[in-house]
Image 1 (cartoon, rainbow, N blue to C red):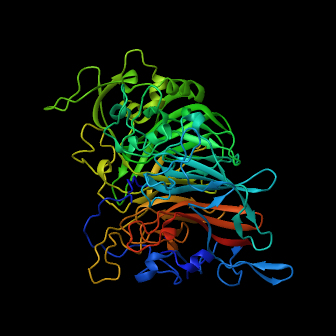
Image 2: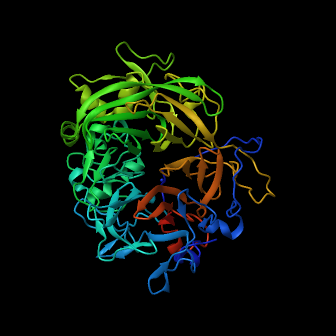
Image 3: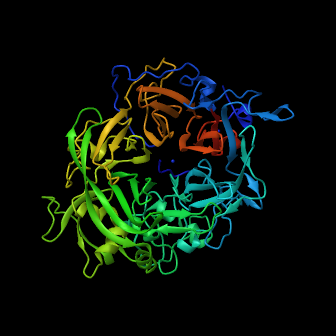
Length: 618
């Protein structure tokens, strides 16, 4: 997901259903050989012209074991006979930001007292990613089947002041069509845990709850305050409205009663009906993209989305309960520099902790200096004074040691990345994103959006004072990696599976402006595997493709197929496979569509949640 400071055209046919969380900052100006594999299928090509402003789906996309031969007018549910309804296969809109129901507005950001925030012009602060708010809009949206068989949606919003909503879903028993259930939209109150923050990716846990994330955690050394005011961090300041109830430039934060940087950067969990909200402080505090729970219901992998970040594993004490456990950070040992690289992995323990203990420390409004003692490296030699460890993380090069009297368990959770680096873990990854798992092969897959900065061999800034464990050639189009797991669900290696290809197109080409080969992936972000198949689905968050793509990569056939393209400026987020009864669905969010596109209608710039399908089980 991209970090964005903000100040779909979805065609009218899209409102009916079918037409047919940028991460990369720069791309090498090279023209390589054609990408491999070449995309298959003819139903969806790279958009050009007016098609760049719409959602388009590949009508020839199929999932093994399912059919897609429902017929009827696009986007409608028609009575073909007295006992039959049909919905055509396609991309179907479910809801957009700004939807109103049950006295609520979907995506309206609220303060600590549950009052909706408003901008200076009196308009509501809707987190849609294209208005004057700070953030990217609706992100992960979980479809959850409850014990009584009913379906609910839990949606989280990627704005500095985070928000979550829940609502009921209708499923037509004959056609499989999904729709919002009127009278059920409800705001999820997070104030008991200091409010929400920049919610990015999420998943449905094996025990049917929504597991979210808080991305781009504040830098507590930079943002620690002892007096009321503003900080030098505009994103941190943009979270003040939750505490002050105001959205303006004049507000300030009182650190004694308002926000503290350690309030944010955690993994939240909530039940489908919006009750039982909590944050899992035991899982550590980083720029959480996603926490992905494996089938043992104890092991979770945590991706850290930023520059010079790490990769983490959490093992809970009890299955189905993430409130206590041991946290580990990965140590990478490169075994090949070919392509996007291969690595063996070992795991460094950061110790055991539980939610209650760490929450108590968070609630006490810790300052950075309570946890770590910082010194700048020697300006001429770069060395650290005796007793300090030199690290290079997202915070830059630092000399660190535990503060006098600091509890290492608390430090390991409140300053997870710094602590991991002090223990020798690898903190060189750049924008680690989505995670998914194939139970049939015991293989986990992880997306890295952009292979640059600390991942490049001896980068003059991001490897200075660090380990230089990752020594690759730059590829700003990113890659997806395969991680084999042992019998204990521990990843032992990380090997490049498929990568994007930096490309320069001639100014006369219909693909001019694309900086990654249009026939290959670009800046992979959200990924998911369709269970029981070899289809790895890859969603893009790229400024290097004019239109981001949702791809299907066949792990067996090694073929790549476009499944969905989204409008200009939109990210592909919230990708997941769901099966309810005989019907299957691929959920997709088109985040901040047509942002900055001249002439785009406001309603077409609302972030949109929809689904590809329905797929009918054979």
